[in-house]
Image (cartoon, rainbow, N blue to C red; front, side, top):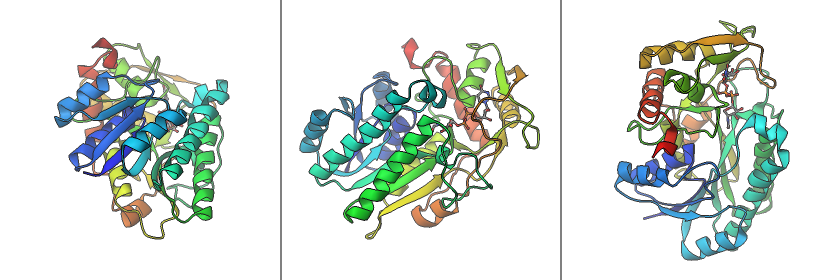
Length: 339
Ligand code: WQD
């Protein structure tokens, strides 16, 4: 069974990818410092897959921990999720982001090189496109970042690009996620943000389940059909599957290749509120507030290259997203912490 190292594998996207890896016959080995996740996730993955993934509690910046893991396991490939991802927090605490996201990636690459493991699937983000000049966004669109979080993603992309130019043995696939949402259909794993959610979908779900009073809609004066922000919301299970497609599609002269992971459809904030109310049968009261600094009006993917080169396209639409988001939140009103 091919072993895959999954950094950040107890996180939201990481845990869903671990489930998909097991289901597609791989042996995932998770390294996670549990900074933004918990061990309960491992119990839930075991309940879904009837297999408990190998787990090492360690920080990806810990060179000796990485050395020990690579000495014990012969990995086919690494999927690198671990990192911090809150845009607002990155503005307040940039050094935390550069240390976790950039230093962590460099430490991982050094360990990979020492142990001659040359394939990496990297968790990048549509944030690297900044405010797009046109939509849908293609992989050749201009890259421009407006916050430290986005900067760390772009810096690691550039490091991987330079490494692959310097040494042909490296093979890198950068997956630029649009907006990950939803949950596994079992309702056993899902997004469990620390504190008040920054992102739209967990916030809506927490209003519906009664944890939060009302949704604040950040601006309704954008140049969009209903004035609210438009985004490309990708079901987290579709996103998980994209990682397995990526690791199965490394080419002989691969180098460093970037792919958009989105549906190619854009939905507004009010579209999402309406769809969630329909799916959950719950009301989601909201108020219109001022725009949030750094937000763009519209962002959605051209996912044609992913379909062509890694044989991946989103299978799940708005109805599945809302059904699964509500199923997770309804079954876990306080996330994992209530266990
Ligand atoms: C979506 C829309 C908001 C919350 C960010 C990161 C990106 C990725 C996904 C990591 C926007 C509106 C939101 C709320 C609202 N993360 N909104 N009220 O900003 O598109 O992307 O998360 O990779 O890198 O930048 O996602 O969910 O925060 O916002 O009105 O309480 O919902 O204005 O239009 P975003 P989001």
